[in-house]
Amino acid sequence: MEFSVKSGNPEKQRSACVVVGILEPRRLTPAAEALDKASEGFISTLLRRGDMEGKRGKTLLMHNLKGVLADRVLLVGCGRERDIGDKEYREIIGSAVTRLDETGTMEASCYLSEITVKGRDLHWKIRHAVESTRHALHRTDTLKSKKDDTRRPLRKLTLMVPRRSELANGEAAVREGQAIADGVAVAKDLGNLPGNVCTPTYLAKQAQALSKKYPKLKVNVLDKAQIEKLGMGAFLSVAKGSVEPPQLITAEYRGGKAKAKPVVLVGKGITFDAGGISLKPAAAMDEMKYDMCGAAGVLGTLVACCELQLPINLTVVVPSCENLPDGAANKPGDIVTSMSGQTIEILNTDAEGRLILCDALSYAERFEPEAVIDVATLTGACVIALGKHASGVMGNHHPLVHDLMNAGKSSGDRAWELPLWDDYQDQLKSNFADIPNIGGREGGAITAGCFLARFTKKYHWAHMDIAGTAWLGGDKKGATGRPVPLLTQYLLDRCTEKR
Image 1 (cartoon, one colour):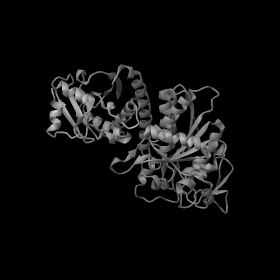
Image 2 (cartoon, one colour):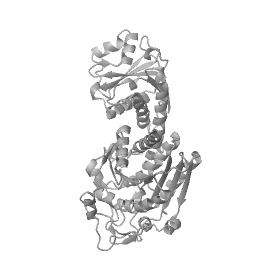
Image 3 (cartoon, rainbow, N blue to C red):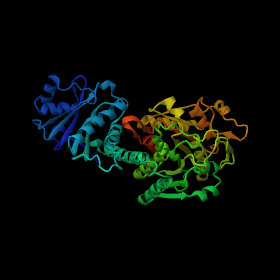
Image 4 (cartoon, rainbow, N blue to C red):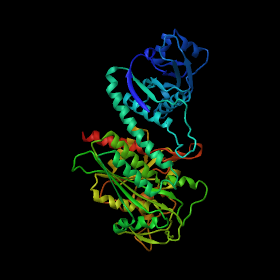
């Protein structure tokens, strides 16, 4: 998909289609007014006779409009202007792009960035138009024998800005939007693959392929013997239940100063989670292929960072394995020793994500990080608490958590802080080991964070629980690519601060 930025009058665009907005009730946006004037009031006549009210998501396609050079004009309902926020704007763009793609319009000039969005500037609107377009056009038919091919798909979108002085700003926004959309696409594609394709070894090979594409990226993969040598007893205890060998994937991007400390992203890479001996119910177990969306998210963020060539040092760590009920699998009551030396009583083998993450978080110490952020589809409790709308975030350093929250607001990929109070640590007591791997039903997402906090005392750390946001079920089933937008925005913000 190609994007460009341009300024100019809508009636003078030699394009397959010009896209303009209609506000409710039957109000013309500036670009629509210009087309209406050129066509001697044709659009306003349509609105008066009730062909379109301006309700959000509704569209009307017109051909060969008098006085307009474009072949077609697409009117897009935007709703009431005062009600247009981040979510509504993305829906408006999505409606327009879907209609263009369905009607065989291969190229279009879009004036929807002139819509007023509460608290947002032109840069934000251009960037999110790119991200929303890519989201609307993303396909999940990789493994279908017959592809869902559109006969004449939308291939080029020109995003219009009001003045020539805004071109550079618009082009920068397009670059950001494309890079983030690339990262989101990587995360979606990896997340949507079935467990028999996307194994830990497959995940490692995909990371290695990235190092061939990006010169500033170095990837290293440790096998089972090397993981054993590191003393990662918690990680390996989960991997024992599968014939698929575990992989510890490390990717180092060096775009900053040589001695600058890196930001470390740790992604949970359970490529299929049956729950182990504490077997999950059969219903919707197929969705447990998404239990590696933390890994997919940090790899997608790495792609966005490489595409933008950010002046920052970034390290990604992905512990990856399967969690299956083999005869060698963890049993409730087993005690394992983590890389940190702390012993863990496994009371529930389905709380395996924290077992692989705790060793990866200990491993992160060797990079002398500026900050560590782990990303994981960790707990159903977080879904109960926050639903599908916000990721849970907590950590041991308030400024880091605050920065992630702000990045979520700016990117539209929102997060909500959960308390990591010492009170919750009292739920993590074992008679037989240093710590159990679960803390009971109450505050389950928080006690999972409290567990991980025991392994992160040597650096600033935040934990993101994306169990509710990483994928959707039902007829929209699929990976969402979150939290790539949030994490990329966080990295962009850090680069801005350092400048």
